[in-house]
Image 1 (cartoon, rainbow, N blue to C red):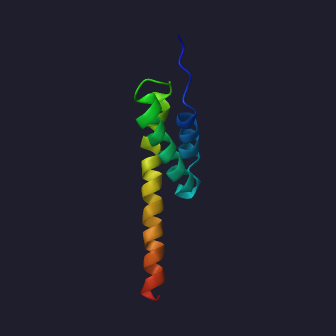
Image 2: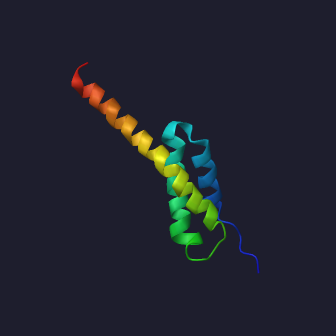
Image 3: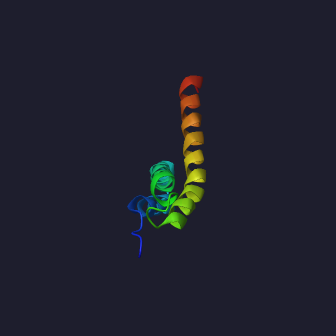
Length: 80
């Protein structure tokens, strides 16, 4: 019997690959983590590789977004 592939895993993988200045990586990371935790990790649906790859690709993009945001906030409060 063939298991259906997780829609969250595929959507999250595509979003992390597109990256979108980190914003899409953040959303894709959440989608892939959700798929990994609830659907693919328990064997309910296929697409485990997509969810793992999405988490691996999305983590650096999300970290860059967080660093950019912290730099922006810092520049707003530094007065320069």
